[in-house]
Length: 196
Image (tube, rainbow, N blue to C red; front, side, top):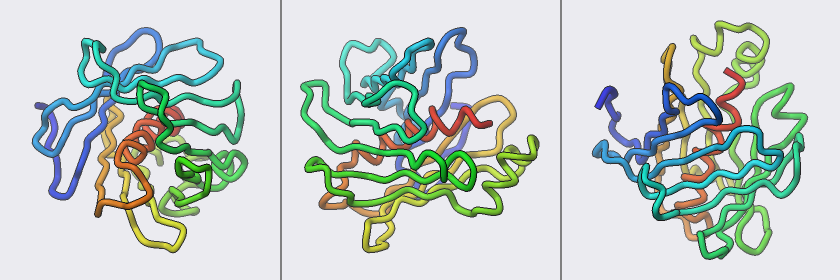
């Protein structure tokens, strides 16, 4: 394996280096074993990510699907392959486009249960408006419950060739499903990764 997983990382998400159309992400566990493969198809009006158990895509683990076509503040539903809802994530459109990235997390019942926020407004501004700063100041996101309790952190790594994000889950949460935490990492790698 061409990278080292740091202590405390629950998952590592890597964008496939060379793919002509769309994007693909490999998801690794703390031991460096492949536990998921995510395909993002090109030229789709509605985002539709399928996370499979391996690159053969014979068995889906979960589905992340946008509710609407091309939307600044899109909501993405996270479901099992059977269609059972696990939760949803909504990107705060204007804030994420001009200030710093922020996502809201909703439970199965549609109630807001957490949020994901980029580490710093100043760093976010520099990343957006000065090209090379995206490499010098990799993104970090913090997932917290509505009461402020930290649940997970997402961190991009400096690399000229491969977009890589680590996911650190701090503790099991009674309301935020582990697959929603992983889905958020895949969305951040896919959607926010385009900014770089």
